[in-house]
Length: 280
Image 1: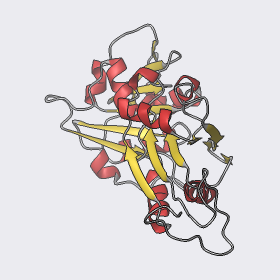
Image 2: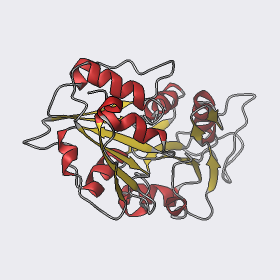
Image 3: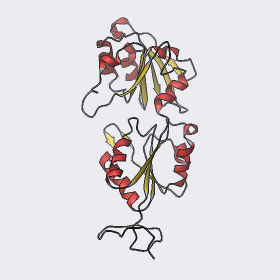
Image 4: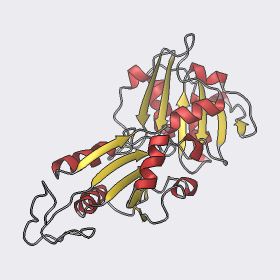
């Protein structure tokens, strides 16, 4: 007997069912889950429940092994790690993969570092699911900027030093990021740049060219919230020199409130460079 309300499978389509009759098409669902910045203790309870209930987990390379280990041992894991210029799967193929898995009747978790909607391309995956008629839910995660500011004791907003905060990306699809530099150069404004190591020179030049002082405090955080987190206290003018010696996922944080970054075991205070290199 067919399951009540189930629609017949379309001819020519491969349908994978879990013990159901051959003429029943069961559609699964996709859940976009934010894994947070890396520390498994920053994972939300709702995200943990989704991981433990998933049939298959499609995950990014930035998701820590400790978080993946929280999933059911029976869940299939698919690594679609993306790095600059080195994509395991192009985004369009990831979108198609999510839809295809759900159409096989599986519960799919798309596990993404940080938050799915903060430079995580979660919006594109959500649109692809909707277009295919696949149910898609979103579970937010702690984005890296929040973890980086918290660990350093550097508030992203502060009544006396930062009345606004803006998250931007330092990596554009073609060339340098197209940003409103004049707006970002306003004082008492925290600017957090994701994926900005390779464009730190351009970012510093554009911000100082738009009027932001080269002496504005800045903080660079690599591997925020993880055991190997590294913090470097510097200035806007020194960002290019600092970024040149770093690798890995990093945040560049610029603004007066970054002067409150607390000294800690993982912190490196960048020595002052000459005024000629600062460009002041």
